[in-house]
Amino acid sequence: MAFAAFATAEAQPQAPRKRSAIALVLLAPGIAYLVLFFLTPLVSLLLTSLQVQSEFGDIGEFDYAFNWQNYVDVVTSYWPHILRSFGYALVATVLALVISYPIAYFIGVKARSKPLLQGILLVLVIAPFFISFLLRTLAWKQVLSDESFIITSLKALSLMAPDAHFTGTPFAVIFGLTYNFIPFMTLPLYTTLERLDLRYLEAGGDLYASPATVFRKVTVPLSMPGIVAGTLLTFIPAAGDYVNASRDFLGGPGTQMMGNVIEANFLVLLNYPAAAALSIILMAAILILVGIYVKRSGTEDLL
Amino acid sequence: MSGEGQAGAVLGGLAESEQLEQRPQPTRDRPRRGLGRWLLPTYVTIAFAFLMIPIVYTFVFSFNDSVKSNIAWRGFTFDKWLNVCNVEGGAVCQAFGNSIVIGLVATVLATTLGTMIAIALVRYRFRARSAISLLLFLPMATPEVVLGAGLAAQFLAVGVPKDMVTIILAHTMFCISFVVVTVKARVASLDPALEEAGRDLYGSPSQVFWRVTFPLLLPGILAAALLSFALSFDDFIITNFNSGSVSTFPKYIYISAARGIPAEANVIASAVFLFAMILVITVQVSRAAREKRLAKLG
Image: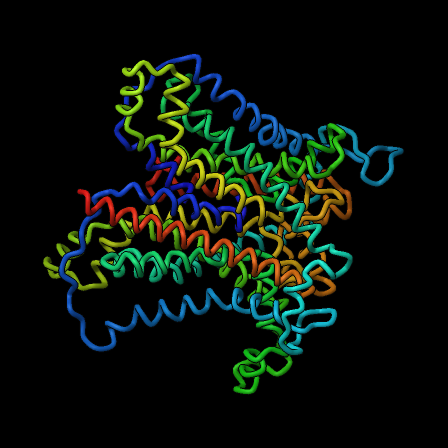
């Protein structure tokens, strides 16, 4: 949504922009705030990631240094978590896209002639946002627990091994990530599909393309901005999430992601340099991936 | 940015969707036979049922006559709704109250700063525009853990103790970009002729702003404020890094998840859910009514 807004707002015809001192007055406070509380913290994070343990200090006391070794250390100890973060996020993003596309298509295209139905369905898509994210995830934990109706029925039907669990497995974490980010995928998809000119689809059909070909060659390319925005809005928060993978929620000891180890290092072990180095790795990897992705999908005007 | 975060973006989107564009009208629907016609509606119905499961679960279990943990169903009661604050010395309500205060202050700050930026971006020419756009975009593309850890590292380096103030500073930071995006769309759709008319009628710049521009921007600003509040209220990850010993509603849930969430938390979440839904539906219905009126006039 946000990405889409960034791309479209400029398109409107506008009165010529003036050069004025007022601009400075309007911009200065907000920009100063972001420099102070967004940009400087990133620099702090970078500096912290290079710190060394104080020689005679307590746990959690560090001195500024230029200790690249921290990066080597966190990669050697946490490479499974790093791979898991991006792997889970990737699978969840693909699943969310596959699940959301038909929903968005139905709301944006099929329900276009019925504004009331469209409105109701949109409200239903965003309804999960109005109930705490953590409680939603915990609800799934209960609904899919070993004693739950769903899991006991699956076991009774021999679709699941009698001693198998669902919660605590990678499947559960990916399930949770997918569920929680479906609305982020559906909304940008809906925004582009809602503006889709159906005459293009008809033209495709008139030229003897099968419905499948029309979908592949016309609908999907035209909805690319929504697909890019939706996958980014899903992938970025999913890769950094640590609630779904947490042991008290849907995860287990073998499902910890980067977010979990950053949290543990920062808030429990007080190993700030390790947490900072992991954060920098996460941020850098995401920026690189997003850059490549946006370039490859040909929607550079997004930024 | 955060999961539950961008969430609110929708609210903004909803409120802004009123700039009606001439969207292509649907033409004849190709008649399809048998199964194919029902496939998509059936899928969508199942998908929505799936999306609603946790909401229904949370709501139903707010009526559970639970003793300590709220896992097994022990019977129906209104008790938890009537005595929300009676559990654990009111810890849930304390956390809820903190969340409201933090949400309100962060919303006022972020909406003010963000609206000013949005006006400047649309109306004025200035140097370093692309750098500023990037600075506004980046917080939305940064994972919440990184935002949270970064701020916490900075507060640590400067020696600021973590409390309500640090939470508010953090929330304001990540809300600003979303406010800018929401309000910017509104400023861009504003007809400059209206302000010109105000000036022609000898309105001073401040009169023109407060009597013409601001009222016209108000729907966008309100949408942005609503969005900020929703983002702040449900934020957990950034809060967790910058809250010290202060509790918020999401943090309370995270911490009690290990020993079991009391049904009272479900009560608060359900009440917030109902309130938000009523708000959104009212806005939708009143917009539909207004559009109908305008259509009649036109």
